[in-house]
Image (cartoon, rainbow, N blue to C red; front, side, top):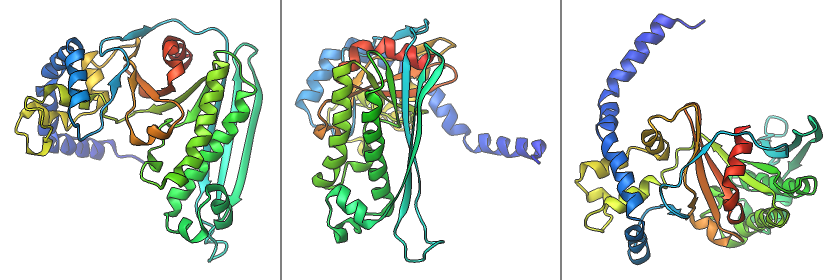
Length: 330
Protein backbone atom coordinates (compact mmCIF):
# COMPACT_ATOMS: atom_id res chain seq x y z
CA UNK A 1 0.00 0.00 0.00
CA UNK A 2 1.37 3.39 -1.04
CA UNK A 3 1.35 6.11 1.62
CA UNK A 4 0.62 9.20 -0.49
CA UNK A 5 1.41 11.59 2.35
CA UNK A 6 4.93 10.17 2.73
CA UNK A 7 5.28 10.11 -1.05
CA UNK A 8 4.41 13.83 -1.22
CA UNK A 9 7.11 14.60 1.35
CA UNK A 10 9.69 12.61 -0.64
CA UNK A 11 8.72 14.36 -3.87
CA UNK A 12 8.99 17.72 -2.15
CA UNK A 13 12.50 16.84 -0.95
CA UNK A 14 13.43 15.72 -4.46
CA UNK A 15 12.34 18.96 -6.10
CA UNK A 16 14.04 21.01 -3.40
CA UNK A 17 17.32 19.17 -4.03
CA UNK A 18 17.01 19.70 -7.77
CA UNK A 19 15.54 23.19 -7.76
CA UNK A 20 18.76 24.81 -8.98
CA UNK A 21 19.08 22.35 -11.83
CA UNK A 22 15.47 22.89 -12.91
CA UNK A 23 15.74 26.67 -12.78
CA UNK A 24 19.07 26.47 -14.65
CA UNK A 25 17.31 24.69 -17.51
CA UNK A 26 14.46 27.21 -17.56
CA UNK A 27 16.91 30.13 -17.45
CA UNK A 28 18.29 29.37 -20.91
CA UNK A 29 15.14 28.09 -22.64
CA UNK A 30 14.61 31.31 -24.63
CA UNK A 31 18.28 31.34 -25.59
CA UNK A 32 17.94 27.71 -26.69
CA UNK A 33 15.04 28.51 -29.01
CA UNK A 34 16.77 31.55 -30.54
CA UNK A 35 19.99 29.57 -30.93
CA UNK A 36 18.15 26.84 -32.85
CA UNK A 37 16.54 29.47 -35.08
CA UNK A 38 19.97 31.00 -35.68
CA UNK A 39 21.38 27.58 -36.59
CA UNK A 40 18.48 27.02 -39.01
CA UNK A 41 19.41 30.27 -40.79
CA UNK A 42 23.13 29.43 -40.90
CA UNK A 43 23.14 25.98 -42.52
CA UNK A 44 26.00 26.79 -44.93
CA UNK A 45 28.16 28.11 -42.10
CA UNK A 46 27.42 24.92 -40.13
CA UNK A 47 28.53 22.71 -43.02
CA UNK A 48 31.66 24.83 -43.49
CA UNK A 49 32.57 24.10 -39.88
CA UNK A 50 31.95 20.36 -39.91
CA UNK A 51 33.67 19.92 -43.28
CA UNK A 52 36.84 21.80 -42.36
CA UNK A 53 37.24 21.41 -38.59
CA UNK A 54 37.78 18.43 -36.32
CA UNK A 55 34.74 17.89 -34.09
CA UNK A 56 35.59 15.71 -31.06
CA UNK A 57 32.02 14.65 -30.21
CA UNK A 58 29.10 12.97 -31.95
CA UNK A 59 26.66 15.14 -33.87
CA UNK A 60 24.08 14.64 -36.61
CA UNK A 61 24.05 15.95 -40.15
CA UNK A 62 20.76 17.53 -41.29
CA UNK A 63 19.49 15.98 -44.50
CA UNK A 64 18.03 19.22 -45.85
CA UNK A 65 18.01 21.69 -42.98
CA UNK A 66 17.01 22.34 -39.39
CA UNK A 67 13.58 23.87 -40.00
CA UNK A 68 11.68 21.27 -42.05
CA UNK A 69 9.07 20.24 -39.47
CA UNK A 70 5.97 18.28 -40.45
CA UNK A 71 2.56 18.24 -38.83
CA UNK A 72 1.10 14.72 -38.85
CA UNK A 73 -2.68 14.92 -38.71
CA UNK A 74 -4.22 12.40 -41.07
CA UNK A 75 -4.39 8.64 -40.63
CA UNK A 76 -2.66 6.35 -43.07
CA UNK A 77 -4.24 4.10 -45.67
CA UNK A 78 -4.80 0.47 -44.80
CA UNK A 79 -1.58 -1.50 -44.62
CA UNK A 80 0.25 -4.36 -42.93
CA UNK A 81 2.69 -3.85 -40.07
CA UNK A 82 5.24 -6.42 -39.03
CA UNK A 83 7.23 -6.37 -35.82
CA UNK A 84 10.20 -8.34 -34.47
CA UNK A 85 11.37 -8.41 -30.86
CA UNK A 86 13.71 -10.62 -28.86
CA UNK A 87 14.12 -11.57 -25.22
CA UNK A 88 16.55 -13.75 -23.31
CA UNK A 89 17.36 -15.69 -20.19
CA UNK A 90 21.06 -15.22 -19.63
CA UNK A 91 21.93 -17.89 -17.08
CA UNK A 92 21.15 -21.54 -16.52
CA UNK A 93 23.54 -21.78 -13.57
CA UNK A 94 20.64 -22.61 -11.30
CA UNK A 95 20.03 -25.74 -13.42
CA UNK A 96 23.62 -26.79 -14.15
CA UNK A 97 26.27 -24.94 -12.19
CA UNK A 98 28.87 -25.06 -14.99
CA UNK A 99 26.48 -24.26 -17.84
CA UNK A 100 27.37 -21.45 -20.25
CA UNK A 101 24.11 -21.74 -22.17
CA UNK A 102 21.57 -18.96 -22.54
CA UNK A 103 18.11 -18.77 -24.10
CA UNK A 104 17.08 -16.34 -26.81
CA UNK A 105 13.47 -16.06 -27.90
CA UNK A 106 12.56 -14.23 -31.09
CA UNK A 107 8.93 -13.23 -31.39
CA UNK A 108 7.34 -11.69 -34.47
CA UNK A 109 3.90 -10.72 -35.67
CA UNK A 110 2.13 -9.22 -38.68
CA UNK A 111 -1.03 -7.16 -38.21
CA UNK A 112 -3.22 -6.66 -41.28
CA UNK A 113 -5.18 -3.45 -40.68
CA UNK A 114 -7.08 -3.77 -43.95
CA UNK A 115 -8.59 -7.16 -43.08
CA UNK A 116 -8.37 -6.81 -39.27
CA UNK A 117 -6.43 -10.07 -39.05
CA UNK A 118 -3.17 -11.51 -37.72
CA UNK A 119 -1.79 -13.54 -40.63
CA UNK A 120 1.49 -14.36 -38.89
CA UNK A 121 2.46 -14.77 -35.25
CA UNK A 122 5.34 -16.91 -34.03
CA UNK A 123 7.80 -17.47 -31.19
CA UNK A 124 11.21 -19.07 -31.80
CA UNK A 125 13.15 -19.98 -28.63
CA UNK A 126 16.76 -21.20 -28.92
CA UNK A 127 19.17 -22.39 -26.23
CA UNK A 128 22.71 -21.53 -27.29
CA UNK A 129 26.14 -22.22 -25.85
CA UNK A 130 29.78 -21.43 -26.62
CA UNK A 131 29.99 -23.70 -29.66
CA UNK A 132 26.92 -22.16 -31.29
CA UNK A 133 28.17 -18.63 -30.61
CA UNK A 134 31.58 -19.41 -32.09
CA UNK A 135 29.98 -20.99 -35.15
CA UNK A 136 27.71 -18.02 -35.71
CA UNK A 137 30.22 -15.22 -35.09
CA UNK A 138 33.27 -16.92 -36.55
CA UNK A 139 35.17 -16.29 -33.33
CA UNK A 140 37.51 -18.85 -31.86
CA UNK A 141 35.98 -20.44 -28.77
CA UNK A 142 38.61 -18.95 -26.45
CA UNK A 143 38.31 -15.51 -28.07
CA UNK A 144 34.53 -15.54 -27.79
CA UNK A 145 34.89 -16.13 -24.05
CA UNK A 146 36.90 -12.90 -23.84
CA UNK A 147 33.71 -10.97 -24.55
CA UNK A 148 31.23 -10.51 -21.76
CA UNK A 149 28.26 -12.82 -21.87
CA UNK A 150 25.97 -9.81 -22.15
CA UNK A 151 27.80 -8.56 -25.24
CA UNK A 152 27.55 -11.93 -26.95
CA UNK A 153 23.88 -12.37 -26.11
CA UNK A 154 23.02 -8.88 -27.40
CA UNK A 155 24.86 -9.58 -30.66
CA UNK A 156 23.40 -13.04 -31.21
CA UNK A 157 19.92 -11.77 -30.36
CA UNK A 158 20.30 -8.95 -32.91
CA UNK A 159 21.42 -11.43 -35.57
CA UNK A 160 18.37 -13.66 -35.11
CA UNK A 161 15.99 -10.68 -34.93
CA UNK A 162 17.11 -9.55 -38.38
CA UNK A 163 17.15 -13.13 -39.65
CA UNK A 164 13.46 -13.28 -38.72
CA UNK A 165 12.91 -9.87 -40.32
CA UNK A 166 14.03 -11.31 -43.67
CA UNK A 167 11.17 -13.82 -43.47
CA UNK A 168 8.63 -11.15 -42.61
CA UNK A 169 9.65 -9.08 -45.63
CA UNK A 170 8.42 -11.92 -47.87
CA UNK A 171 4.95 -11.48 -46.34
CA UNK A 172 4.84 -7.68 -46.53
CA UNK A 173 4.26 -5.51 -49.57
CA UNK A 174 4.72 -2.01 -50.97
CA UNK A 175 4.57 0.74 -48.28
CA UNK A 176 4.06 -1.70 -45.42
CA UNK A 177 5.87 -1.15 -42.13
CA UNK A 178 8.40 -3.39 -40.36
CA UNK A 179 9.23 -2.37 -36.80
CA UNK A 180 12.50 -3.58 -35.30
CA UNK A 181 13.28 -3.78 -31.60
CA UNK A 182 15.10 -0.57 -30.66
CA UNK A 183 17.18 1.42 -33.12
CA UNK A 184 18.83 0.38 -36.38
CA UNK A 185 22.16 1.73 -35.09
CA UNK A 186 23.77 -1.11 -33.13
CA UNK A 187 25.79 0.83 -30.56
CA UNK A 188 26.81 -2.30 -28.65
CA UNK A 189 28.88 -3.43 -31.67
CA UNK A 190 30.76 -0.16 -32.17
CA UNK A 191 34.02 -1.10 -30.42
CA UNK A 192 34.05 -4.81 -31.32
CA UNK A 193 36.45 -6.41 -33.78
CA UNK A 194 35.56 -5.89 -37.45
CA UNK A 195 35.13 -9.62 -38.08
CA UNK A 196 32.72 -9.93 -35.17
CA UNK A 197 30.47 -6.99 -36.01
CA UNK A 198 30.44 -7.60 -39.78
CA UNK A 199 28.53 -10.86 -39.19
CA UNK A 200 25.63 -8.97 -37.61
CA UNK A 201 25.81 -5.82 -39.74
CA UNK A 202 25.78 -7.92 -42.92
CA UNK A 203 22.48 -9.45 -41.79
CA UNK A 204 21.06 -5.98 -41.04
CA UNK A 205 22.20 -4.74 -44.47
CA UNK A 206 20.45 -7.70 -46.11
CA UNK A 207 17.20 -6.65 -44.43
CA UNK A 208 17.56 -2.98 -45.37
CA UNK A 209 18.46 -3.75 -48.99
CA UNK A 210 15.58 -6.22 -49.40
CA UNK A 211 13.15 -3.76 -47.83
CA UNK A 212 14.34 -0.94 -50.08
CA UNK A 213 13.87 -3.16 -53.15
CA UNK A 214 10.26 -3.88 -52.10
CA UNK A 215 9.58 -0.31 -50.86
CA UNK A 216 8.88 -1.54 -47.33
CA UNK A 217 9.71 0.77 -44.46
CA UNK A 218 12.09 -0.78 -41.91
CA UNK A 219 11.92 1.34 -38.77
CA UNK A 220 13.81 1.38 -35.50
CA UNK A 221 11.60 3.04 -32.86
CA UNK A 222 13.11 4.27 -29.58
CA UNK A 223 10.53 5.67 -27.19
CA UNK A 224 11.78 8.32 -24.76
CA UNK A 225 15.11 8.74 -26.54
CA UNK A 226 17.78 10.61 -24.59
CA UNK A 227 20.15 11.17 -27.52
CA UNK A 228 21.86 14.55 -27.96
CA UNK A 229 22.89 14.43 -31.62
CA UNK A 230 21.03 17.63 -32.56
CA UNK A 231 21.95 19.46 -29.35
CA UNK A 232 25.57 18.85 -30.29
CA UNK A 233 24.93 20.68 -33.57
CA UNK A 234 24.13 23.71 -31.43
CA UNK A 235 27.42 23.25 -29.57
CA UNK A 236 29.22 23.42 -32.93
CA UNK A 237 27.22 26.45 -34.08
CA UNK A 238 27.72 28.38 -30.83
CA UNK A 239 31.44 27.73 -30.34
CA UNK A 240 33.06 31.13 -30.87
CA UNK A 241 36.67 29.94 -30.97
CA UNK A 242 36.00 26.77 -33.02
CA UNK A 243 38.21 24.79 -30.65
CA UNK A 244 35.39 22.63 -29.23
CA UNK A 245 37.26 22.20 -25.95
CA UNK A 246 34.05 21.97 -23.97
CA UNK A 247 35.70 20.97 -20.68
CA UNK A 248 37.71 24.18 -20.64
CA UNK A 249 34.87 26.41 -21.83
CA UNK A 250 33.48 29.06 -19.47
CA UNK A 251 30.46 29.99 -21.59
CA UNK A 252 27.31 29.46 -19.50
CA UNK A 253 25.10 28.59 -22.46
CA UNK A 254 27.55 25.93 -23.63
CA UNK A 255 27.56 24.43 -20.14
CA UNK A 256 23.76 24.44 -20.28
CA UNK A 257 23.87 22.38 -23.50
CA UNK A 258 25.74 19.68 -21.57
CA UNK A 259 22.66 19.22 -19.35
CA UNK A 260 20.01 18.77 -22.02
CA UNK A 261 19.16 16.30 -24.78
CA UNK A 262 17.22 16.42 -28.05
CA UNK A 263 13.96 15.79 -26.20
CA UNK A 264 14.35 18.96 -24.12
CA UNK A 265 15.43 20.90 -27.21
CA UNK A 266 12.41 20.04 -29.35
CA UNK A 267 9.93 20.26 -26.49
CA UNK A 268 11.28 23.77 -25.90
CA UNK A 269 10.94 24.69 -29.58
CA UNK A 270 7.32 23.52 -29.59
CA UNK A 271 6.36 24.65 -26.08
CA UNK A 272 6.29 21.08 -24.71
CA UNK A 273 4.53 20.15 -27.97
CA UNK A 274 0.77 19.78 -28.29
CA UNK A 275 -1.75 17.07 -29.03
CA UNK A 276 -0.62 17.49 -32.62
CA UNK A 277 2.09 15.06 -33.70
CA UNK A 278 5.21 16.79 -35.03
CA UNK A 279 7.93 15.15 -37.11
CA UNK A 280 11.28 16.92 -36.88
CA UNK A 281 13.69 17.36 -39.79
CA UNK A 282 15.59 14.26 -40.90
CA UNK A 283 19.20 13.81 -39.80
CA UNK A 284 21.95 11.38 -40.76
CA UNK A 285 23.47 9.39 -37.92
CA UNK A 286 27.24 9.73 -37.69
CA UNK A 287 27.76 6.87 -35.25
CA UNK A 288 31.02 5.13 -36.19
CA UNK A 289 29.34 1.73 -36.50
CA UNK A 290 27.23 2.97 -39.43
CA UNK A 291 30.34 3.26 -41.61
CA UNK A 292 30.15 -0.49 -42.34
CA UNK A 293 26.42 -0.55 -43.09
CA UNK A 294 25.43 -1.08 -46.70
CA UNK A 295 23.37 2.13 -46.54
CA UNK A 296 23.47 5.25 -44.32
CA UNK A 297 21.12 5.38 -41.34
CA UNK A 298 18.92 8.43 -40.86
CA UNK A 299 16.58 9.46 -38.07
CA UNK A 300 13.91 11.94 -37.10
CA UNK A 301 11.90 12.51 -33.94
CA UNK A 302 8.16 12.26 -33.37
CA UNK A 303 6.93 14.63 -30.68
CA UNK A 304 3.69 15.53 -28.96
CA UNK A 305 2.66 16.11 -25.35
CA UNK A 306 2.64 12.39 -24.53
CA UNK A 307 5.52 10.95 -26.54
CA UNK A 308 9.02 11.70 -27.75
CA UNK A 309 10.48 8.99 -29.95
CA UNK A 310 13.50 8.59 -32.19
CA UNK A 311 12.65 6.91 -35.50
CA UNK A 312 15.58 5.42 -37.42
CA UNK A 313 15.22 4.65 -41.14
CA UNK A 314 17.31 3.83 -44.20
CA UNK A 315 18.27 6.36 -46.85
CA UNK A 316 15.64 5.13 -49.30
CA UNK A 317 12.86 5.88 -46.80
CA UNK A 318 13.67 9.59 -46.46
CA UNK A 319 11.17 10.63 -49.12
CA UNK A 320 8.42 8.74 -47.27
CA UNK A 321 8.79 10.26 -43.79
CA UNK A 322 5.22 11.61 -43.84
CA UNK A 323 3.80 8.20 -44.74
CA UNK A 324 5.94 6.47 -42.08
CA UNK A 325 4.94 9.01 -39.42
CA UNK A 326 1.24 8.57 -40.27
CA UNK A 327 1.52 4.79 -39.88
CA UNK A 328 3.34 5.15 -36.56
CA UNK A 329 0.68 7.64 -35.45
CA UNK A 330 -2.03 5.03 -36.11
